[in-house]
Image 1 (spheres, helix red, strand yellow):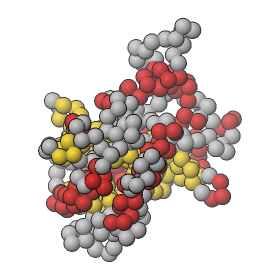
Image 2 (cartoon, rainbow, N blue to C red):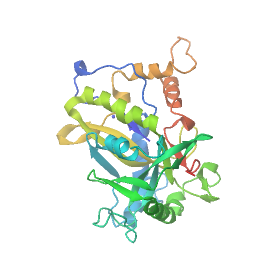
Image 3 (cartoon, rainbow, N blue to C red):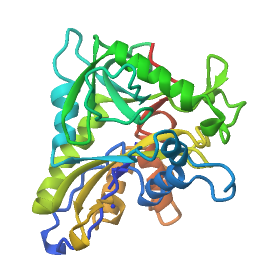
Image 4 (cartoon, rainbow, N blue to C red):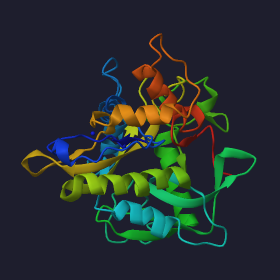
Length: 332
């Protein structure tokens, strides 16, 4: 997940006056991703690998399948996205959720659930959020709780959908996209993280811990609201893809994922991401995080920027990233 702090979520300084910036010694959120990888991942999803122009990108495949109706991102004004996560998905249940499973689904008009007025195109890739409980035996895996999942549509409205509808749309996604050459042609067929029930499969779902989301969508968002005041515009969730290099461990090459970005007012009435690595307190925040880890110092006694970045990312948990992809780590 990206937190463009300019949350892939990445934060840009833009036109905010230096004197108004409230410096923070708080470590960067675990979900933080540098501006470069954030932009590259979104472009990889949209345009694919330029070295293999004969192969369509994931976005091009989706546009073909939906007659050009596929949306590549979803914007939520103000605190709408945070409210959706914490006041809807994580609201009190019989068993308190400590994670969310976000499923990639292809909407099926033959089984529309509550969406009967053309909210989504047939076969359009959408996200369905299921409150979940982390497996105490394996914290990389979480199981769905209850019979209700949630969708946040493009107008900012929350919809409750049944597990049955989610399963139907998830199976539609797997049959039309996730296991087809149009999505798997660049995946490593012998990599265990790409196999589900013995078949090469693109990402079916992503699990995020509640604590990590609180760190971003509550704590970091509060900091951004204070810093940017009237400039803050909301959150954008974009489809993205790991590149041919995969994550920091070289896994999940070309796998589908999502990018979450805070947005601020930009030029000519447009919005632009907030990239944290472009903020003046970035190095201090990086050091604050690295100070909690046992990193190696350079000859000068200082952590290099690369070392600090890696140490900061390593706090995010498994595989130096913020979410657990299925496969390998699938809900039970």
